[in-house]
Image (cartoon, rainbow, N blue to C red; front, side, top):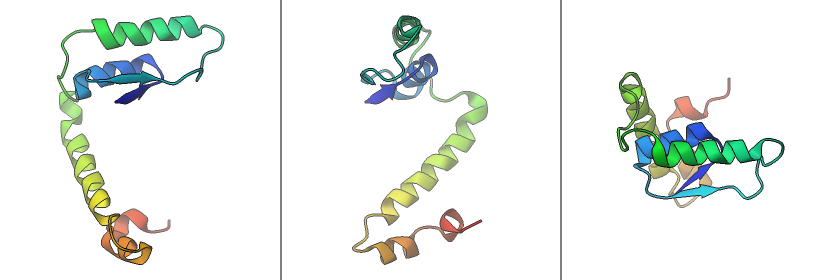
Length: 97
């Protein structure tokens, strides 16, 4: 399920997640002009082009690399204790600048 906050979220939801489930944040960002934002969210979510096309061609490789990094981090954080988790995560991701 994706939490949709603006029309670009709705567009990506269709492309990447093939529109399986969506959620709107209750009263988040709903001030002046909110009815337009909701209308545009639903337009993008339900009426825009083909679904399930994935990321734009020029973003496929970077997104796949980011997904691989995230998968490594997910695997690292399921350790018994925090110290083992830090040791398992790639040091380049947790170094101080």
